[in-house]
Image (tube, rainbow, N blue to C red; front, top):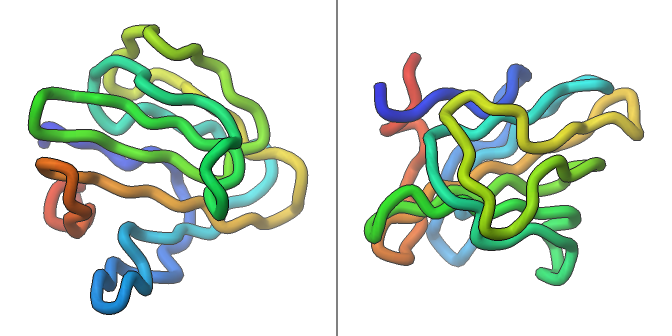
Length: 119
């Protein structure tokens, strides 16, 4: 697969774009969970400036695809940095269990990550 799971955890909210309910998937993870790049690309955003996403990383994989990794505790990459598939980009660690949010966008529009991720 071109994509890999960014975290290991329990899927608790599937993709549901109707009415902007969930533009990605939510996964409950435990403390000290590493967050990994789902595919290779360039970090185009890292920070906490987008309301509702907490500490966020966005990676551009091509002119067509972006991925977003939200609700992290520590960010380990910088804007402009190239990352490899599977490279650790963030860390989740402040709470015992936490909801992590992951999106894939194709041509700027959210798509169901489960179509792209391996079973």
